[in-house]
Length: 91
Image (tube, rainbow, N blue to C red; front, top):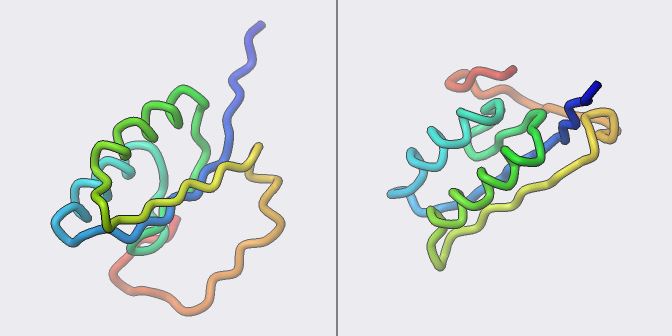
C-alpha cells in the first residue's frame, strides 16, 4: 500500500501589478486563495516542486514571493484572522 504524503504550504507574494493576475490564477490551481496575495493549502511534494518552477519564471527583479512549507497542517500552531475583506472568498 502506498501512502500519499502531502505537505502544507503558505504562499505570500508582492509582485508588479502586471504579473498579479497571472500568479493568482496559477496558484488557484493548487492552493486556496485566503487574502489578496496569500494562498495556503495541502500540496504534494511533486506539485510543490512544479509550482515552484513555474513561479520562478513569473517573478521579476523587484518582485518577492515566499513559500512557507510545513510538514502538515497540524504543524500550524494557530491561525488568527483579524478583519475581513468582503471581496475575497475565505476557505
